Length: 202
Image 1 (tube, rainbow, N blue to C red):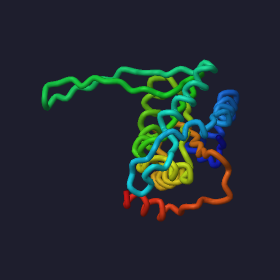
Image 2 (image 1 turned 90 degrees about the horizontal axis):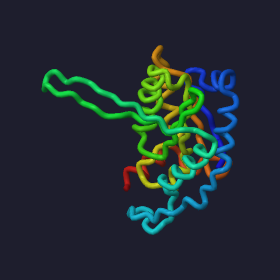
Image 3 (image 1 turned 45 degrees about the vertical axis):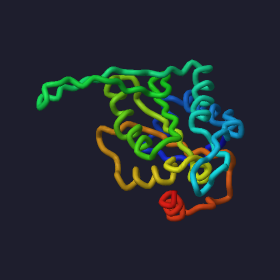
């Protein structure tokens, strides 16, 4: 696969190049080693593309995880707990980061849009507050690739737009968002408005 575009949130790229250059190079290498062609295994049941073979988020995640684990990156889980006094109950659960090494957290996201923004604006700050990471990398598909996956999968273009419009806060940490695709394409075949229209039809 190829890194097509990047968005440096809270000076994420500069921070990583200064403090974690080896980890950043390793992430880029892993992206280049993922053969997405073997992950086109999901047969669509959606009416607008019934029978079409799509890229499987499960298979893509599995391949990314394997490559990270071969290089010693670990999945990290932390327990969380909060008290709800109004109902007299304690809520317990956990938060999990896909891969971590040397205080760099990585999230590989081929899912719903809400998860992409949550990773950067909530989960990574939680893990930073716990001292587990000091920066992050979010790996997401470009729009063209999202069009070859199930409906509801978000993309780099949408995420970059919202993060730019949201702006940065003091609590945010440096994050580099990498937009990836199977191949470099001269231009997007779908505009954002066309993509929204396609999603509404499904």
